[in-house]
Structures are given as structure tokens and as C-alpha cells.
Amino acid sequence: MGDSRMLCDRLIALVRAGKKRATCGPLADYEAGKDDVPVVGRRDIALDWDGNPVFVIETLHTEQIRFCDVPEELALAEGEDETLEGWRAGHAEYFKRNGGFDPEMMLVFERFRLVEDLA
Image (tube, rainbow, N blue to C red; front, side):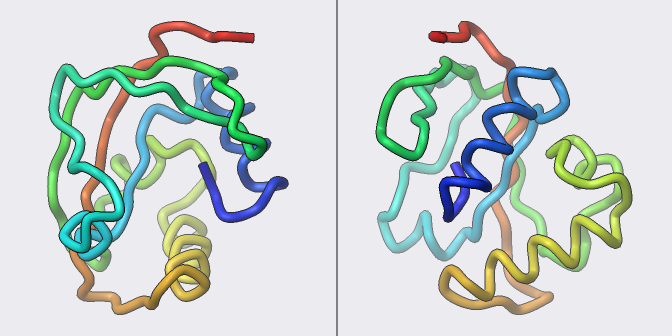
């Protein structure tokens, strides 16, 4: 989760607090084989920055949507920001750091539930 220890720790805390119930990534990353596209019902073990298991999540819903079309409700389900504008700014910077950003880029959004905290 995240691209730094600090962000990873923050995202883990948000999931544990019940604030983060969604995540997204560029469709291009999935098409390049960096990860499997999430499917409803799949369970994953999330890892901390050191590679230790922290919790089990289950995919509840997935959708593909352009960055510029992400509605506020979906963006805020990620739990990282208070506004759509904040989500857009933070995620644009994240995507720039991790391969590139285009407001028209396709994203894979995943809604999930926390199944088990492994702490």
C-alpha cells in the first residue's frame, strides 16, 4: 500500500479505522501484468512496508473509470481526503511519481471490506 513507508502506514491506519474502503490504480498497470485485476469475492492479504501481513480484505465491487470522471462519493470512499479536489490533487501527484499521469487515464477502482486484522 502506497509508495513510501509513511504513506503505507497511513493507509493501513485508515483501513483499520474503517475510513478506507476503496482503492484504485491505473488500468495500464494491470494490463502490463503488475497485478491481477481485482474480482468480486477475491480475498487478498495486505502487507506493511516490510512485507508483513497486516489484514485480509475482500473485494466487494470493481469498476473502470477515467480519472477525470471519478465522482466525489467514489473518491471519498478511499478515505484519504475530505474533498474530491483533495483526492484529485493527491492522486495526480501519486500517479506522476509512479509511472505517469493523464487526467483521461483509466483507473480500476476496487471497493473492499476488512475481513480480518492480523495484528
